Image (cartoon, rainbow, N blue to C red; front, side, top):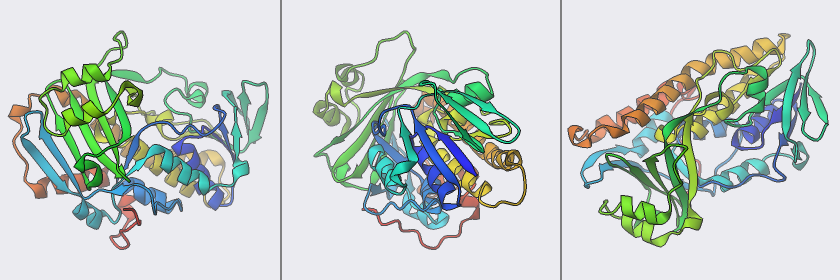
Length: 385
């Protein structure tokens, strides 16, 4: 089939790779004039690395494999620590922190250069009995057998095909960055999450001295964006190395991302259209699964369209959605609930034993995944530092 992928982000590139490998003719239509390589780091959990491996996208030489996940309070009290090496062993795939631009470039390298069409902003999709048409702002149009909406939380494909309300703000936002750092945590293998009454932060090594850091705060769309000076004031007295990190960064390092959430629809498209990633299920980053769920979408959609068994494309697209929706809806609810509970007084939360924290990670990742439920534990290394 000829497949038109609308959107050249992580999801669009991932699904293009899978579809190409299964013999389809694919084009990616991106509204920007080049690959959008902004953003900070991406935590690729076991389900994400498994999906990337299934799509034939190697991770050798990029990012940092993580060995543990530690959570503590703003007063320095340890809440729990999970052994990510054991999670890797149980699930058959590791957890890796990767700069978003490096992951995007790695995906692009796996694709033929003539697959991209830049400067093509989709303004609508039309479906017919035997084909679909994507219309673009420059007055042009393209015809294909299937259109995949990988165009993010403001998806034009979703609005055209499904209608409905846009993603809603959750009342929180992130200020984050990816910077070179002399802090010891930047050269380690541990992700650190620190939770306070009205704010959270995280620090994750991303390889080669890069540190992905983020600060979450309650936020409304009528409020001004915070500066580094504001963050220094709010997070004064937090455990090391929070204050030292904030002393080393500037406003130029800050990226601002309001948290939003889509209700996950029961059906994601029409007879010849479907959605992947934020276009279908934008969610707050509380469980760091948005990119991972997008990778799972790309992998499963590629599998669903892998075999020409005589069925109409609609049957294959709905099969993909019916398999994915229960998993991703569960993850979306967990992310929303986790975000809503961030105002829970932390002094009421006791310390969890290491084995419980580790087992919880395994259960959570497996329950929200399609690909992990079919994996066995061999071959866990992806060759990252």
